[in-house]
Image 1: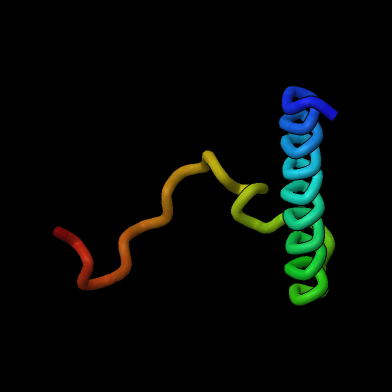
Image 2: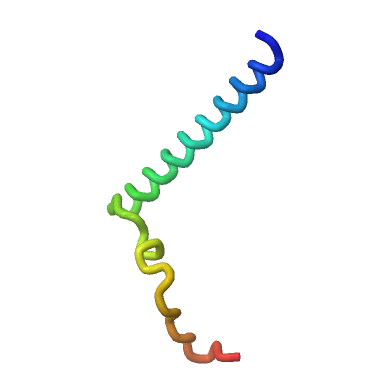
Amino acid sequence: MNSESLILVLALATLAIVIAAALWMRARVANAKNDPERSAFTETHGGTPRPNRPGTEH
């Protein structure tokens, strides 16, 4: 196996490991929340901002 194909194989293996780890961690979060749906942040992102908490006005 020459070095060019070795680099390609290592790059693809690294990418596969990163994707697998991200999916595994996402599944752990969903199980911890007992809710496989996306978080409320992603559903409501982009709406109007909530008001400041009392005492935090600058």
